[in-house]
Image (tube, rainbow, N blue to C red; front, side, top):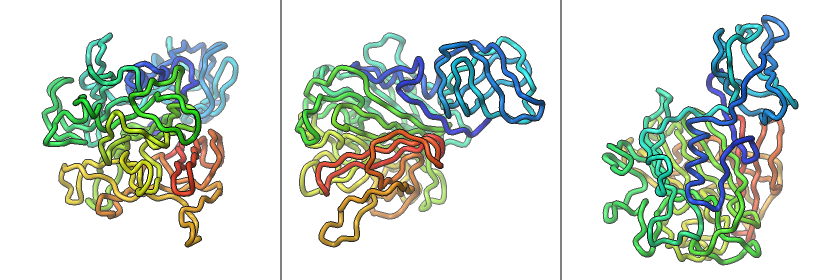
Length: 417
């Protein structure tokens, strides 16, 4: 079934983990974007009648698939190959949604796996490289065809035992994994390698953190130089054939972060655009910068720009940048004001409210002109920290607060844009 929104969670069987090891993010993206994982031989696929729109896939015990995920059948000889949403998962089987035109049973030696988002790897470093790099690109013929470039290693001289993160950027073309031949974002003409290198002060620019230092409280100063804590990070990923978002908990005390790579309809240019959310996009952050709020390392949060975290770019702007500017020219433009639910109390305009509602997260450019809507990531008024199911399907809700002017609140919809 085409057009399915797919999600991935850290407790899925055979999914790579985000650990305190460089390269963890690339290992995960390889499986989620390109390869899929958890390949299980199919015993049988049976519909209750020829026109039924559900089917039972028998797999044997320990198959590891979960409710509401998307699985892929491959190897059938009678038209069953494709992606299917799991409606319910049992000990030895799953029930999936299918088409009335699917055969009543499957033929062939088929397998079932967790379906990837169907990107491709355009270029990569050799298997086993100590400096892993990937150039990912959507295979959707309607996509913009831009490349997500990821470096997931510590550049020599930087803090190898410190925070773990992938350096990320978007490029239009490459001749090999080490040579960018086109436009890139983010980009500094005075320092072309700013997003990828180490200059003694800055280790990269746009970052997706996945493991950071242990915290002793919600407000606990620390830098990227501090040793990252052991263990694995909780994560949730949602996406489709052109876009995806990652929610993760990179340390203790609600160290939430959300990142994204996505295409969206741009109201200003009347066409498709592409953007990324990443830590540091608004302002390059030195390796030794002392973060006061550990959740200020994400792409969406709000802080009073006159106090803590103004240097980190974690103020009242989205930590994002878009590919086309307002004139539809490939001249990357930073995002503008962030939005959240707030109070009408004039003495405390940032007063927190607690309602179980979510809303679309608008994109404003650096001129604060509205451009579009971010897929999957939503504004939330809910102060609970939870992964749950409601009438909008499975969703993730994140909430953390340092004071009434500094907080993170977002939701991630796992089954719809």
